[in-house]
Amino acid sequence: MPKLQAAQIPVTPFQQNCALIWDAETQRGTVIDPGGDVPRILAAIAKAGVTVDNILLTHGHLDHAGGAAALRAALTQSQGAPVPVEGPHEADAFLLSGIAAQGRQYGIEGLENATPDRFLTEGETVTIAGQTFGVLHCPGHAPGHVVFVSQALGFAVVGDVLFRGSIGRTDFPYGDHDALISAIVTKLLPLGDEMRFLCGHGPGSTFGEERRTNPFLPR
Image 1 (spheres, rainbow, N blue to C red):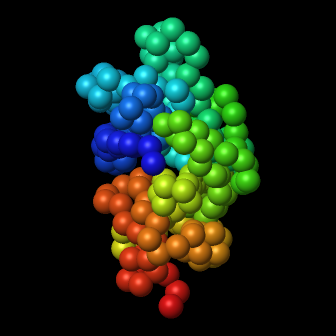
Image 2 (image 1 turned 60 degrees about the horizontal axis):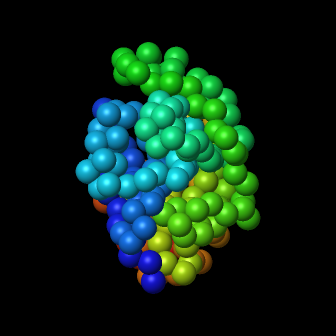
């Protein structure tokens, strides 16, 4: 099994979990959801000694994608090769194009609109630290939200779909509570109780723990 390591880098006033995941043998990795505070992310990459192959976005909210453009530019320059941004699903294009304006509304400086090099659809795959992860489309919190899953590693990155003891907000104009619950129940929980996940805010958990104890999920 690969020796994957991960660092959570809290970014923006929303304390979003930007994740740096890398292979300890090759020192090549992936950044997921760089919402802002790009100098902090770059410092974490440098400290770990990682070469970043790609940047992944789970969805288009400003605290998950607001630093993607600046990080892509900085890494492409420092590493001497393009570092693509992949994801989310194209249904979040309207959110990605409104990041800068929304950031100003929240009083957060330096956030930029994001234009992915590749939108993702369910059934496709992405590479995280050299390992293949499947893409699941899990709308509800955001219409284009995607989740990255490796059955082989027993590990998933779920963004703001599911948290320890909670679920993603659906009180946005485009939110859909029923769709969110359906995605969790029909796509995530069947992956197995032992599967660990990293989420967009707070500590991670396992699907089994959330199936048993999460008060927002049906029994």
